[in-house]
Image 1 (tube, one colour):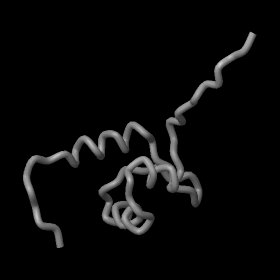
Image 2 (cartoon, rainbow, N blue to C red; image 1 turned 90 degrees about the vertical axis):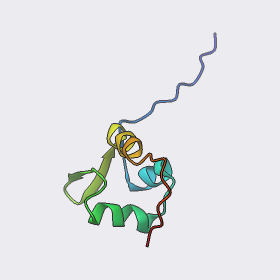
Image 3 (cartoon, rainbow, N blue to C red; image 1 turned 30 degrees about the vertical axis):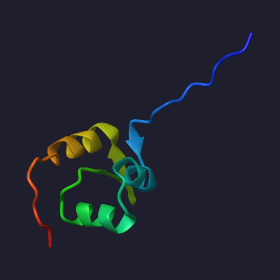
Image 4 (tube, rainbow, N blue to C red; image 1 turned 90 degrees about the horizontal axis):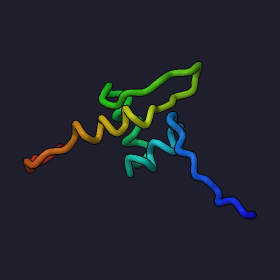
Length: 70
């Protein structure tokens, strides 16, 4: 009898995983953090992200308007 490997999605992501999840660069991730736009957790010196918060951030960023950004 063989078992299929299961994929476990972690609820808490590190910075590299959050970058990949959002499809953004490291400098962009840290700019969003510094500007207070991206929810995160601090555990000592570690920065962690809840997947549900990242999903909500993406939902809130959806727009139908074209805006020029500086």
